[in-house]
Image (cartoon, rainbow, N blue to C red; front, side, top):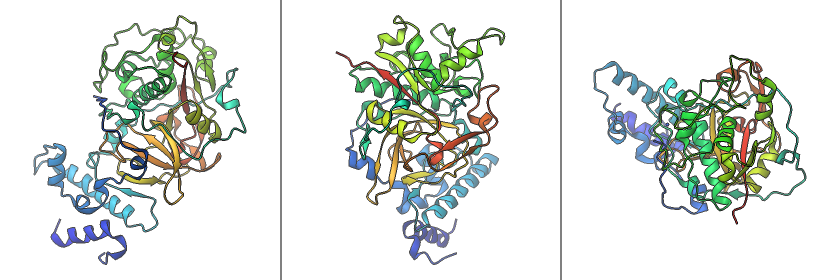
Amino acid sequence: MGVVHLLVLFCTLVCPTCATAESTCSVKDCDEPDALSLLSYKHSLSSGLSGLQSFASFMADHGRTYRKGTAEFDMRRATYDQGLQKIRQQNNNPHRKWNAAVNHLADRTDGELAELRGLRAMARSGGEVAGNSLGQTSNVIVPKEKSWAHLRAAKADTNQLSCGSCWAVASATVLSTNAEIHGYDHAFSPQELVSCTPNPHKCGGDGGCKGSTVELAMEWALEKGLASEEDTPYEGRDTHCKKKRRTALLSHDDDHDDEGLFEDRIAVGFHPPKSQSSPGVALGMIGWERLPENKYEPLMLAVTQRGPVGISVAANAWHLYGDGVFDGCKRDAVINHAVTLIGFGKDENDTLFWHVKNSWGLHWGEKGNIRLLRHEGNKYCGTDHQPKVGTACKGGPATVPVCGMCGILYDSVVPHFRKRA
C-alpha cells in the first residue's frame, strides 16, 4: 500500500467529510469502569493512525507468524485488506451510528468467524409451560435505563477462543451475574458446560465446541450443578466430562425417548428443579425461565427485575465493530450466536440501545461489549430462513420469525435464584 493510498485512507477514516480522493475463557477481573465510561467508551482503533495499520504492524501486534511469500500470508493479507475496505465504507458514512475498527479478528476467514458463533437456539414447536413467569406480567413500568455492567462477571475478560462455545460462555456469565446479584459468590465454569452438557436432539449441532443451546446449559446447571471456574478452568476445546453426563430429561435411548417430555423441558415459561435435592438448588437456583419469543416487554422486565439475560442474536456482521450503537443487521437474520444482555439505555443522541456483553475478549468492541439499536415494542421483524444452520433441533421448523435488531428478541433465557439470607 503506497504512501498516497495510506494518506487517503487516513483522511477517510479520521475525517470522512474532508476526504477528496476516490473461544481459555480466561475469566479475569479488570479495573472497574464507571457506567458513563462503559457507554461512551470509544475504541482507540476506530479512528486515528491505528485505522491505517499496515498488515505487518497488525501481525506484530497480534502475534501472527505468517511467512511472506506463502499462500497463507497472501490469503491473510487479502482478508485483512478486505476488512479495511469495509471499515472505510462504514466510517465514511456521515450518518452512521457506529464505527468499525481493526481488531484481532480482522484477518479471520468466514469459516473461522463462524466457529465463534456456536449458538444453537431452540426453535419452539410446542406450547408454553404453566406457572408464574415474566411472560405473564403486563403493564409494569420499567426504568428508562438499567445496567448490570458493574458486576464482576460482567467486567471479566471472557474469550471463547476458536471453540463454538458462545452458548456455554454466555450461560456461565448469566449464571454468575445473577448469582452475584442474589448474594452468592460463584464464578461458574463454561468449560464444564462445553464438556458435559448433552445435546441428544442435535439442536443444530453435536454439542460442545460444535454448538448447543443456553436452555440445555441451564437444565444441566439446575439438575447436575455446575463447577466453579477455578475448579474447571476454560480450555476452549472439548474435554472429558468429570461428571456422569446422562440426564433423564435430556438423554435418549435409540431415538425412542419421550419427545413430549423434551419439548416440555425447553418450552417457553418457568422451569423448576425436578426435586429439592437437585444439585442446582444447593447453588441457590430455584429454576430458569425461557421468555416468550419475539416479545419486547418480557425481556425488558427480565433484565430489570432479575438480572442479565442469555440472548440469541445474528452476529455475522459484528467482527469489525468498534464502538457506537450497532444497526447493521437486516430484518431477516440467521440466529447464530449467544451473548449476555447486561442492560439498556440511550446515548447522548437519545438513540435507544441494548447493552450486550460478548465473548471475544476485552479488546473487541467497547471493552468486550456492543450496543445494539433498540426498537421499542415487538418491532423490526423478519424471518430466519436457515434455522437449521443455527437454531433448529432435529425435526424443527423450516423458518422462524425473528424480531429486534439482529433478532435479539427471538430466544431469551434467565435463571432464577433465591436471595441469600
